[in-house]
Image (cartoon, rainbow, N blue to C red; front, side, top):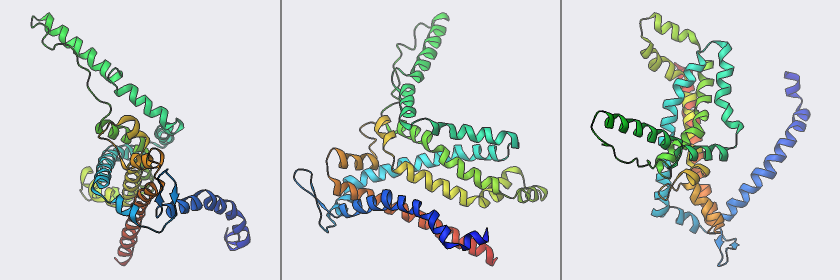
Length: 304
């Protein structure tokens, strides 16, 4: 293995295809959009190249900041719900018998085998006014109304009115949690799987209960996995387009929908590019902060 690593020519040969793919299909397109972000939109939707920060100035106007803050709030709620659901699931998988781990992980990954568009339309079938959820509530309503009529109280509940589960922010958050929950579970599971179980046994032997061991030993030791899951889930949810577009209403536009509108409907590529890069700058900043905190924490552990 060491000889193969020292053979730089072989390493370079294997790196050429990956490097070429990244340059052609990532670096160059991103570079073009970055140049566009300093351009200007023509009267017919053309893009004129000009070194101007006008698009970035427009991006921080109150109307656009309002959409950004709403997107951050919805992404934050999604992340919190994902960690509340994902941590117990990851804990259960990590401490399950070995023969059950792979089937349980397979259940987490199976949704990725189906197109996201199809899965989102499935949620529409569940949440719409005549969907499965309202059918269930209507059945329950009819049964309760029949029971009240039987005991002589009459039709006290009245006619059933479908609940508006769809086309609002709550529906978007439900959809985002469904889509991005695996991105929280997998980093947590990886950290829990690498956790030295002797620390947990020592904590229990010294008299700490299971809850205290969980929050005083387990959580601090897997904090890098928690940070990875939080950042990954938050960034993906923040830039989501399809889920809020299909499940949300007029008050559910997120920054991804605004960017798509600028590129397609408004044909304002410079402004859409500026919005995209502001989102990318924020993602890079979050990743840099995470890396810096982990590096300092590791250095502090070595000193101690």
